[in-house]
Length: 300
Image 1 (cartoon, rainbow, N blue to C red):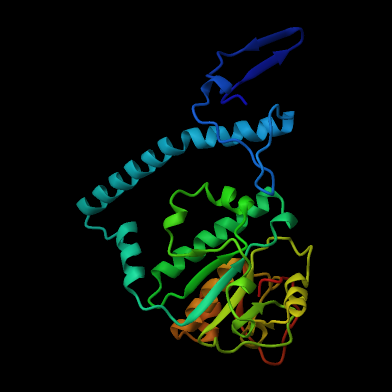
Image 2: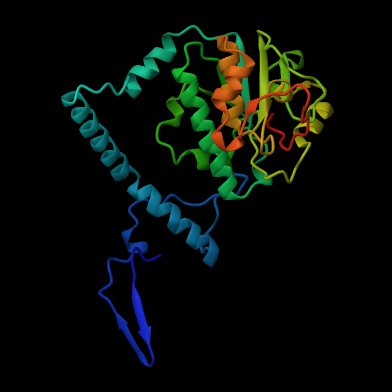
């Protein structure tokens, strides 16, 4: 709980350097409270572990406004320096927001299914939120953005995403209910590497579902089994037809999102995959005589 505390110890002696301010309960200006996975308030007194989590969140909430103000000041200074050096930093956040609202969206939808919170630890849930943030970013910069939906957006996801200021103003449709309660089954396609159906073109008036799950391959085939159980269509991206990869074919949520986006914009599959996939994947143009069709992720 200490901000900074440095101690030096030796035989029988302990020299303690002057301590900096320790963050305690008396420093809390805003009580953020804690909720369980169902959204119920956790009553006090907290256990030691709950108190540690509460204090960690309280520190973040209390410093949130100050941190945001410093970020704005840094951005303002950066833009001033760029103007003096005749460097174009591109459109501002406000301009980007106006641009995406003015663009005609493709008649294709992408859904990120957040019904897997109970299968992930906090660290992996934060990874999912970061990937969704990247999806939002590439979509608003696209010349032909798609309709972006988040479903099963429960209390846990709301708490996790609240770390990002202003998410409520994103050009994203957040839904607490499942995609089954929003769209007809015939318009839904769940993307899963276990599917035998290869997707070459993305159909109009269709919503493609990406599982919002970071599981380190612990739940292989889960999205495929969900699609079968719910009696909705499923499909996989044609990775093995266009590229070979040195690593496992594990794609993140934002990789899949950006691939769909660029193919919908008119870019070829081969160019899209070579552009989107990170260098560490070792992707290279596919040799038709040697095709690796093994998949290691449900997010394909």
